[in-house]
Image 1 (cartoon, one colour):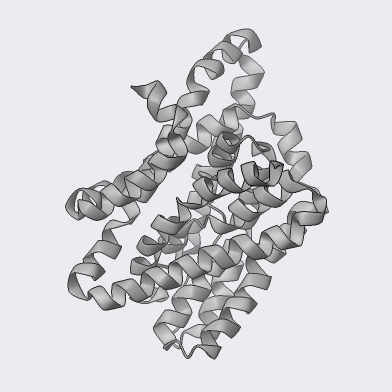
Image 2 (cartoon, helix red, strand yellow):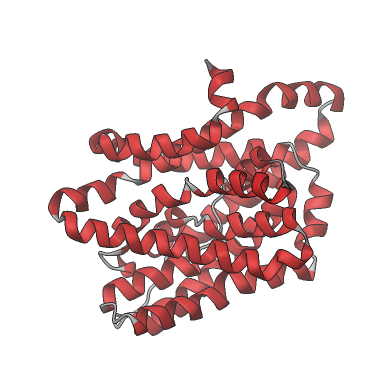
Length: 303
């Protein structure tokens, strides 16, 4: 059974988003456990990567160019679109905050499942997460009128726990454990790390279902906006990188389409307004359709 889930992991991500929508009470009950899943996924993913190579990738200007595109450029694009479409202030704040959000920590596992360079995706994920507090601060300064008091201590604790903690854990594990035994362990568990990704669409979509129960028309509007954001980030990133080859372009596109809205909400909380969390829930459905679409696009481009 586990092998079946692993082989079909990409469509099952979407299935779990649907299950979370169908069973909102279970989804909402699971939501508080997502940080634990996040830490486990990051630790196992980093454990299978060479830290020296990862630091080299993080030091390259290409990664930081992508980070500017992922955050600053898309924040400007989304701001203009929201203004042009006359979004109300709460919704405009929410969509710009999504554009400011770093890439989903599950992205490297998804990229690996697609057969692309997961190390590059991890470097992109970490870099976009490092600029997240600055991006969110700018968003709040320009798009909300209340005093901005970011939970900096909470952010840095999460930064240590979810990025530097797993990186140090990986470094010391590789340093002190026999490589042969560690390699055997990683070979056994690596196919199953993708299963942890199922928790995110399942646990986050419950807030969107609550909006749907209260106002189906508004929920549909949020779903269309969420789908539009995912498609916009994916398409523009692909166009920016298509001259560098299909693999790099698709990796950048799906990394940009995946947004770590859970971490953003953990940092800024209610300052993001009442529209953010339902929009974050609505994002789960198109976000976890992206890997399926990317696999299809990858196959189509081979023809």
